Image (cartoon, rainbow, N blue to C red):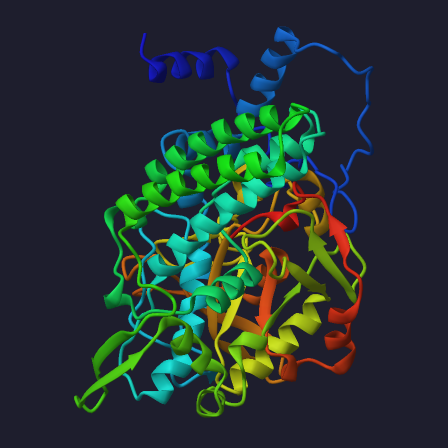
Amino acid sequence: MPMSEQLAGRFESFSIKDSNKGGSEREYVYVDGEMESPPRSADGPPDYGPCEPTVSISRMEQWEKELLNDPKNRLALSALAGTDPKTVLTQRSATIADTQSFNIKISLEGSPITNQRSSGRCWLFAATNVFRVPIMRRYNLKDFELSQSYLFFWDKLEKANWFLENILDTTKEDLDSRLIQALMGAPVNDGGQWDMVANLVEKYGLVPQHLYPDSHNAMNSSTMASLITTKLREDALILRNLASKTNSSQSSLGSVKEKMMREVHLMLTLMLGPPPAPDRDMTWEYYDKNDKFESLKTTPLKFAAELSSKDSIEANRGADVHEMFSLVNDPRNAYGTLLSVSRLGNVIGMRGVRYVNVSMDVMKQACIAMLKAEIPIFFGSDVGKWSDSKSGIMDTDLVDYELGFNIRLGLSKAQRLMTGESAMTHAMVLTAVHLDKDGKPVRWRVQNSWGEGAGSKGWFVMSDRWMDQFVYQAVVDPSFVIKEIKDVLKMEPKMLPLWDPMGALA
């Protein structure tokens, strides 16, 4: 019998009548969280019974009968059973309010809209989209894109080395320990953090996109990542086995590790192509916005170092992108403290990940000040929550799950982190903000890296309420925060374990 006929028969057997003629809302299930107090029944608290350890079939039948006795639930069943709940429950009021209009907007946001394709390189796209703005200003460019693949190549190679060095440093740990399993989980993750891209730029420099364009495997990275991960896990077992032997010397381990690294380098070169050498000359030919042909001979390292030159800093309104650092909002930990993540990084001997933990008000004040100075902002968020990639809207009021399911979702930001409900999953760029008459932010303009087919020709809008709940990081210039915040960078960091949600790679 078709499912539709079965449902119809069950409706009839229940002899459903509208017992809620008065129009009052039925009682909600309540999940404890940020709400001041749970909703109360007009008839007082429910009569609780003993906790049942098993799922009772008779109880399920009773629940189903009561559920389908409510016409609102019957309507919800018709609407939700055959359609994505996010589509059915999208609130028109949010789509109207979240417009692409802002009273503070940087004049040069950077173009074209970039596209990371089927890869997890958002952090490299967001970072290079920040880096390109002072370059575009200095060289009077209409459009410009830096090579994300260039940094991607070196990041994969450095992460492989990082992984193998950590394996050698943890040979006394049990293989099934949480630390070793965390290291084994994703040795060459596509994602990354601001400090990691800063390491790559310092060691390898930057390259214009057309001098090292995307290969198929850069745009579709899963096969490459899977292959290298498999190889590195095998290598890890070999190194651990060798290290356990009393006659193994550091030189023999080093020789084995070098062979392993050479194999990773081979795989990367064949799948991404040989990259420009960091210290060898490259010739960048381009047209400026006046259609004048120009040519620049430099190296990737010199090209990147130019971002800290006097001319580039002036072009970037006094900001040096090489000096920027991460503010984060982690309400589990005290504000005004420095956080780091144990064994998280990419380049041995260079800086690890560091976060200055601040309130959202402090973070937003710094972001507003930077946008007023016309400086774009790298930020990390949990992009999948209460957002729509087609419309490009991120708003906690966008999808009304409470209306559709008669439930309350009340986890706080700290609780989401503590339970694994949320973490940084995506990096993007802020280029504008709309302030109300009291100077408070209402919505933010976001440059994404999903191509022009997402959002409004590639642009997203984020409500300020969504920012409070799902933005965890903003990278700022030191001149836009007070001295007390900058001084936190001098503190000894609180080390979070590798599996902490603040160790998630955007």
